[in-house]
Picture 1 (cartoon, rainbow, N blue to C red):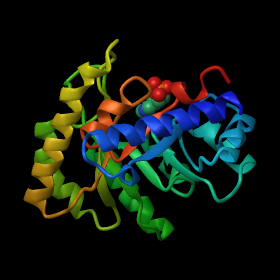
Picture 2 (picture 1 turned 120 degrees about the vertical axis):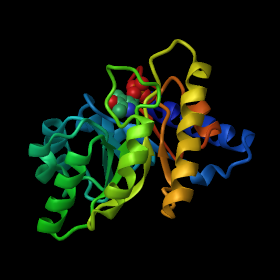
Picture 3 (picture 1 turned 90 degrees about the horizontal axis):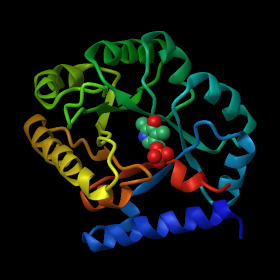
Length: 226
Ligand SMILES: *Cc1c(COP(=O)(O)O)cnc(C)c1O
């Protein structure tokens, strides 16, 4: 078995075990293979091992790679999206993870209208308050959510966050649980379900699953040693 296949099977098993530990159905959690910086051949190996959902953060790189791979694959955009790139990104990616301002949300909505599509997005939340991070602060999100939800084309499916870098996975737990709590409250007050929580990376995806992640974004743990 190739290293990539072994890594993939081990990550899937760890996701499933974390789900069961917390009383969740492993089928509620999907692995987004973060393939940025990795060449198309390596992604093809992951496809052969059964992975068909990938996340990319750099538009130029994605534009070059996606046409080299099977058309049935699904792609998520996980990078910081700028207004002038929206038109390129929307047709290629089924979900945009990092929508971090009302301005970019309006741009996505407007271009969705032009393209005749209903873009699916996640709102990025800066739960930790770190200055270096993108995302809505929780209070700003609360103030802005109604307006975001009123944009006619935009399908707001939930939230995404990144925990601060830390040597231990446990350090991420409070941020993930805070995001889930915020989601529960805002879903209840807005009446919009917001079912998707994108949280957890190579170092902390099991904790994220225990705290309610429905999408985990795993790159280095999957491709390391390949
Ligand atoms: C690169 C990246 C990841 C994957 O990080 P790993 O630690 O390599 O698993 C996840 N989310 C975002 C937003 C990223 O940019």
